[in-house]
Length: 368
Image (tube, rainbow, N blue to C red):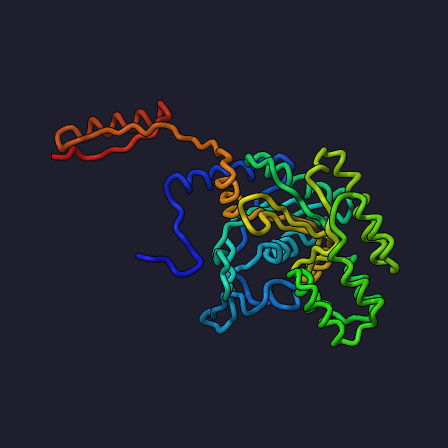
């Protein structure tokens, strides 16, 4: 009678609202010229391996097929879409725009209110490394939330390359950077300082790395970031963010955008902009996204890419707590009662109403 921990049933009015939200988001993404794609619920383990830079192995649902291959339920759509695009669009030179919707599965040991099965909807723009592509994805994120009915939200934008540049400048290797990112993305700056001190990082470099925690705010924060950036990679990252902001103004969505140079994702495949969307009523981001220019090369296609995902269940929770109405199609259902003597007549009437009149009709036996 009960579901396992971390999953839940959705039915009745809640299901109607969810179905409507998915329709509205899909409609807006299609408006931008994206096409739908469906990838398998489970994939080979290598698609989500540590080398790819996705979810930790201990958080994956793993199992074996009869040939002994290790399979996993997808924790994240981006590697799946990247694999698929590399396979079916290998020779395509023009940008490819793809939209997906489905459930993801993460075996969290500490739930903290998070579901282990969650619905995700998102879009990926593949084969375009321009700042205009970055702006399109962030603008599409905003437009999708608007179209779903949410108007009070903020998109926080960073750039993974800024932090990578600081790490390289400090002489930090990739494994150390990966661990440090966990501390900083978790806002554990005391732990980050202790970790860097144990690694023997010099005070100047250490202070610069930890200073990213204070680099958040409006457009003016990018000037402060420029002052810190002494290496080419970090400088280019800040320049890219400035150009991005100018382009977002053309979409008229800049008021929903702020910057956070300490915004780091647990996914190691991000190479450029990273962003998260926040609103009232939920404790975590309802939107996540970023640029991943090297991920497709893992599957054999050298192509830049950028994308976003909307966490549909969290979006619905936020809208419910904010009392944002969801207009659902609540067309009246016509009920026709029948008994053994008039079943054929009532059935013919129901078929006519459904096929000719476009009505919703249910047949039920007369209660005696």
